Structure formats: C-alpha cells, structure tokens
Image: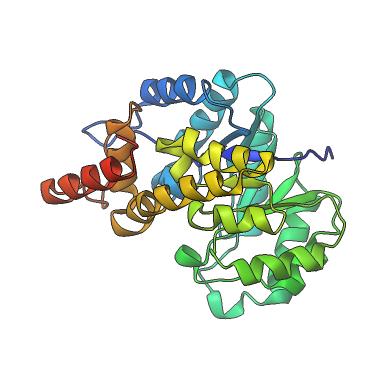
Length: 298
C-alpha cells in the first residue's frame, strides 16, 4: 500500500443539510470550492463534525465521491469509514477506496466498550488494514467513544505496513508525547485532532492536524503552523490563543450547530443540522458572534 506524508491542516468537513434534513450536495461542493482557496493539506469526508452517525451509506459514498471530484490537485482525501463491526468497516472502506479516497480514518469501535481492550483493538485495526485497498489511519476520539486507545496498542499497530497514521482527538499533550515515543522513528503520521492542542503539538514535533476549527477559520489554523515553522513562535502563539475561545465554542459549548453557524457567518455554507441535533438558539447565536468578533475572525 502507498504510504504518504500528511503535513498541514485538514478540515473534518461539515455536511450541510437543507430544511427538510436532506443532504445539500450543492452546498458541499460550494464549501469544497472555498476550501480549495486555502493552503490546506486535504479534506476529511465523514468525520465527527460531518454528522457521520446520522448519514446513510448512500449519502456517505456520495459525499466521498464529490469530495474526490472537487478537491484541489495534490491534496489528500480521507474518508471516515469506521463502523462497529470489522466486516462492515472493511466493506465501507473498500467502497470509499473505489471512489478515490486516499486513506480511511477508522474510529475505535465503542458500543461494547468494556471489551474494547488492547487485544480487541489491535485485532480490529490489523484485520481491517489487512483487507482494505487503501491505507488506514486510527481515529481516537474519547469525547464521543469513551474509548482511549493505549500507547502500547498504537506502538504495535504503527508497525503494520498499511496503517500509516493516527488522529488523536483526546486533546492530551502528555498522551501525544507517549504516542510519539512508541512510534519512534517510523514514518507514521501522528496528527492532532483539535485546534485546542495545535500550538503545543507543534512544539513537540507534530506537523499535521485534522480539526473542526479549520471548517470556518482555515487561514488562522494554517497560520499557526506557518509562523511557528518560520520561527516566529510569538506570532504563532498569539493567533493560537486568539482562536482558542472560538474553537472551544464551536466544538464544545455550541457543538456542531455552533460550528455550522460560524461557517455561515464566515462565508461558508453551514446549512442545517440533522435531527435529533437542534439548531442554535438566538441568544447562543449572539454569544457566538461576539466570540468570533473578539477573535477578529468576523
């Protein structure tokens, strides 16, 4: 399988829905065209911020297809194809591969959480990686799954030729250091999964990120890395600290409805959320606009 290096910022793309709760594919394409204007490393279709658990297989595959079709040349397309069973994950991943996805981001299975120990997760990711047509990346998002893949398991899996990386959305810098130590000098792509950890992650040698904030504020996310790599750490940190409250608002406080509202305010097509998620209340819209203004994003 083809290894490739991921360096830079990737948005876990929002999925715009219309008022009836149907996927608005035209708005997705419009967002792609706008993201293409920024110096992003690629795109993640079907991430947590894509409302993936609420999408049908048909919708998922259509979003992957459109993302591949409309991406800017030279950028990677990742597809979040992790499902609860090994069999279903392999099948969906291979369908995404046929549509041109470059790699699969595979969520840790979590329904039977008490049984998802090191042995189970190592077996799961190994079997998936052995049976799919594209490289695999591990997706650790404890906030939603309540599963945290151990550094030991990551160390074992990082040696698999078709497991090329990991997105860690735990937000824990100490754990990121542990992951980094177990993968050693391998080419494994260790990516941070939240803008709240972006600047600290850069300081320990992480150079790729998949983060919700890049949906609505891609330029600022990119600049944190650009200034850091130029040696202007003060400017890098200033942008990071200025954007921190925005990230906290759109991923924590106000959730996906907040992220989509921020996207709409900043020139993207946010669209509606899919039920049972609820739209943002008017008073929360006011608070979010204030947060964006204070961060000089609006």
